[in-house]
Length: 593
Image 1 (tube, rainbow, N blue to C red):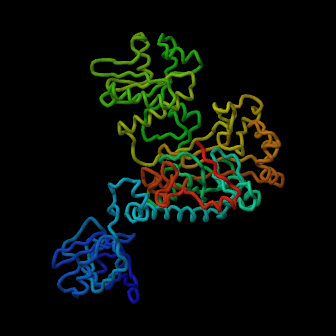
Image 2 (cartoon, rainbow, N blue to C red; image 1 turned 90 degrees about the vertical axis):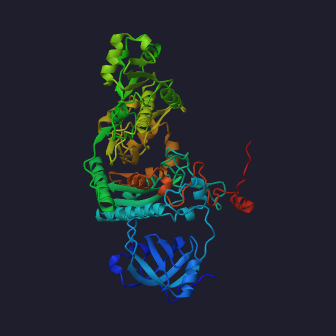
C-alpha cells in the first residue's frame, strides 16, 4: 500500500544537493535506481529528472526505517527525509558524489514490478521494446536530458522572437486540403458527411493571411503533419518554428535567421556560431556536393571529368556524353585499403539502388593503377582523369556517367556521404550554410509536368520576370534553405503578393483559373485587399534539436515517436474504431486484396 506525502513535502530535487548543503535536513522524492543491501548497511540511489543522490541507512537508523529500506526494489517510488552528510567513499561520476542523505524517515509511495529493461543510459534492449514501454524509456536520464534540452530551445526561441517584435499566433489544425508537396492526413467531418478537413503540412497560407491582416511579424511553434514514409530525420507529425515578416526582403530574413541561431547556440550550449553563414546557389551545391543540403565538414567534392574522357572509346562514358549527360567523379583520399574490390562491389550495388547504372573506379595502389575501365583508355586519357581528380597514390576515384546529369550528381552526392562515413572523415562542429536561388520549377518525370520546387506562392527572382514565357528551367525563385551538417533545417521564400503574377505562376504550373480558385481562392481574394510584401521561413524544431545534441534519430528528441511504419508501439495507434463511429461519419471501410 502506498504511503502518502502528508507532512513530508519535497524540499529539493535529488540532483541539486552539494557539499554546501551538509548539515541541512531535506526531503527528496524519486525513483529507486538501485538498492544495495550490505547487511549492516543499505544504500539506495534515488533518481529524479535532476540526477541521483545516495540515501544511507546504517546502525544509527531506526529499525523500522532500516527494514523498510531493505525491502525496496528498483523503480520503487520513495519519499525520504534526512540530514545531508559527507560521504566517506566519494563518487566522482555524479555531481552529488560528495554527499549522501542519512535517512530518518522513509516512505514507499509506489511499488514497481520488474521492468522489461533496466532504466540506464545506453540501454542494450531493442528499441521496439523500449518504445512499447516508452513511459519507462523516458525515465532514462539520457532521454530526459534531451527533452529538457528541447524545452530550453523552445524557451530561447520564444524569447528571441518576442524581443524582435514577433507576435505568437495559433493557426488552425483542421484546415482545407491544399496541394503542398506531400500527402495530407485527412479528418472526416461528421456534420458535413463526405467532406474532409486536412491536418496542416505547415501553416503556410494562414501565416500569409496574418500578414494581410496587418500583424506584421508572426511566429508560432507549430505542429505540422505529412503523410510520408519515415526515416531517421522525419516523423509524420513534427514541430516547426514558423515565422513570417512584412515589409522585408530576403536579406532581412536571412539576417534574422542567423541572429536567431547565434543566440540559440550561445544561450543553450555556450557555443559561438560564426556569422554570416556561407551562401551557395542551388546550382553550385549540386555541382560541388551533389546535394541541396550539403555537409561541408569534409571535402571530397565532385569533379566534372567530361572533357577529359570526351574522346574515350569506353562505351559508358561515350554514350553518356552523346546523350547530353556527363561523367563525374569523387576522389576518396587514402581510401585504397578501405575500398577493396569487394567493398567497391558493395558500393556499386548501392549506386544502382539510387538509379545509376553502375560505378566506374580507379584504385591507385603501391603496385600501380587498378581500374574497372583502364583497358578502354589511353595512358594520356587516364593521366588526364587523375590530374583533374587530384588523385595520388593511395586514393580511389569513383566515377558515375549517365545521360541524366541530375542523376549523376545526386548519386555521387549520396556516394560522397556514404564514403565519408565509412572512412570516418566527417569533422565535428556545426557547419551552417544557406542555399539560395533555387529553381522555381522542377520537372516531375512520373507526371511529365513541371511542378513548384518550393510552393506556388514563392516569388520568382527579379531578373527572371522577363523569362516567364520561356524555358521553365531558367526561372529561379526567391527561395532559401538553411542547412546544418547535411540536414535541411529550414525552408523559406519571399512570397508573391501581386494577384496578376500569382495567376501567371498558377497558369505556368498547369492550373486553370478555375482550378486555382477552387484550391486557393481564399488567399487570392485576400491579396486583392492590400497585401504587404512579405516572406518567411519554417525551421524544423525536431531536426534542430537533433543536430544540436548529435542524436542519431528524431526518436531521441520526440516525446512519443512513431516507428518506420508510422505506428506507435505503446498505444498501437493507428487502430480500428467502433463501427458506430464510422456510421456517424458516413464512412465504410473497404477491404483491399
